[in-house]
Length: 416
Image: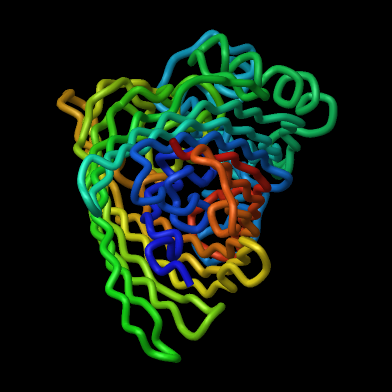
């Protein structure tokens, strides 16, 4: 067996908050192409994938609609708390209550249950240059198209203060438009397209042939990289419009792993990667009252976000080159992102309150990834420029405070 062509070895560095909905990157070791031959210096890779479903998991790991990730219901009254607006609905409510803050209604009156669905596509390009034995420089740039569609807001509050036609006329019919007019916050669907973050990675890969009947080869891998904030930023004025990267921040991925070839066709391994994200400032929506819910923050201020450390661990097993260059792989992946914090240097805002934002909570996600690939370099005869092709699927199955996309994809690789 050609040990120097053993297994895919590059680490995962796609993250839920780096790639929208947890899309896989072409340098994700589970789907990445075989390392180039020793005589080749350049490898070019094109990847395309699309989502066919999305799963959202709340703090207890229960599967929810994506717009119910943080709270099942959104509090419309709390959106207006402490603010004077020209909303006809709030003028009506304040009239009943005897003026703003009069207390003539309860927060249970203004509860809405949102629902919406995500769909996304990705095209990504990867170039790898072998500048020294065992040393590779990789540059990757993804492009995304993400859509939120079939958004609905169903009134599920109580009717303690008013009923029937009043709710329909002044609350249900007008609150989405009122939210946009008063707070520049769109609560409808959207479509966004743009670049992701540019990744520059240094990989070191070394094989240690063992020459035994069972243990054939051991491969070690180390990585150090840098991602640059070329990605489309999150849109604070659209409903859950996530960034196509680290939202304007630079990050430092690093880690390592091990691959083991057992007998003729079996390969297994593990990966561990960590990602440090530098904090950044931008205009963000923040919670100003404890009763406010995560999708309905009225206040936008300049805020600095400190990101929690990202950790990713992977275990895999593979049938390796078992039929004319064909390999099949299955892996389990665990993702964890530490809790974020934000700081705002503006009087009148309570740091304890705006750090109650549930979107800052620790995130976990579990995935199963499978792939089938073909590498023409395993054939007895191949051209100097030889192709590799693969198909893959990624399915999230559990987590907390996470939205993950089930995706299918394909990629084409050429070595030069």
